[in-house]
Image (cartoon, rainbow, N blue to C red):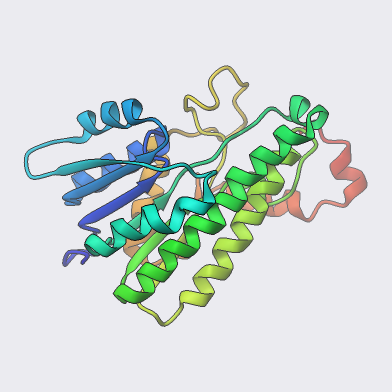
Length: 251
């Protein structure tokens, strides 16, 4: 259960080696989370990440989990939820892809969509069923500002995040009244391993800043947070631009 201050005491991270996921785990550990499970594809990367989180009174475990292997989600994740209640599940996996390459190679574009959307739908529904049974807990879903309006420069990735965002918002509505909640996080450009070498967008942020937004959202019971918050207004403007004007923007 969450402690008296509303902080989760147990955390399951799907995509446990990502920079944003680990920054969030560190922030929650500082806020009294005491059990962390890092789930992902690479046991070696997960163990390195776990070593960086372990501290007196903090248990960090690792779990092999493949977001793309939707046939295995119920078994792998079901065993975690059956063993003990999980206060917070962070869905942090995803792939950026390469827009130019993916346009020319539809199979690779489909892989981006499969991981970012299909994998998230599968894992999200398994998590939601467990939270409903528990009667408490939070599912934190890392979406993106790219979900707000598909842009020419990254519409494969953006469309996959748009699907994820809509799914997560609907899932939150479905869980309303169950004691569980869904928090959708919409970061802008974040300086991480995944974006290394790419030109930073305006209002670029850090994994630590995204982690702070997650913490605030969990404490306040928010259903959506932006990182940074100013992007809420920037993207609202872009979303309502007439299409002929939008097409002339170099984004």
